[in-house]
Image (cartoon, rainbow, N blue to C red; front, top):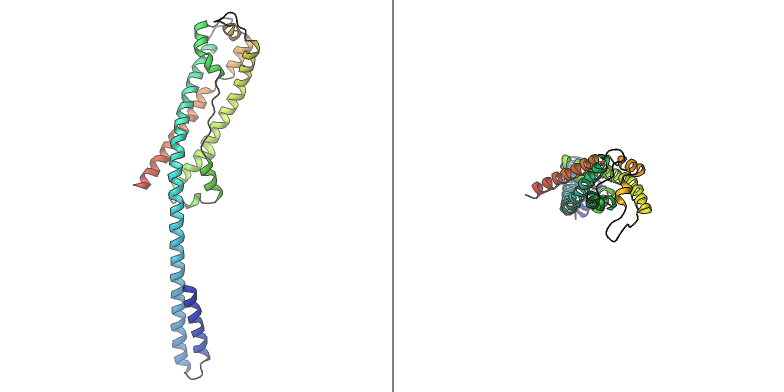
Length: 239
């Protein structure tokens, strides 16, 4: 519509300038009037276009943040569950590392902790929505700079550091699991030689290499706290 108005008044400008029946003063007044109309029409067109684009961006941002909130709520459940597992794993490893030289582990204690030697824990974030929004170049459309930075920090720094730590831990722990599996023997219907294996130098050394679980737990705490902070910020926007 605005383009038609501009074309119409541009044509009128041409007709005014080429009209030999009017004086140059009259032509000048008509020319300036038509130019003012054209400028006004173009300005209004740009204003409406910008307004429409801002509304569209705001809609996309609101949809993204609403979905992100759901993703983070699910992630927090997994993060807290994983954190509990690492807390128990830390206790199991601490028990072994605190045994005296050549001291055989208590059979009941080993039975209690045995599941935590074999379990596999690793965080799998629901980050598809974030990656899609980021790759489309729309992260910058989030006007709240602090919220924007928190989202970027969570996925690109905090979660990335957590996954690197847990992957490294799983790799080291896998060597212990392989050692236990290769040397485990059933001694009776209800007992095995796991206590004896855990007293060996090889097993003790492998457990000592798993000392950094407290660091992993700290990184879980950071991710949980940052996720909750982002959810709170999204809730404030919605209200």
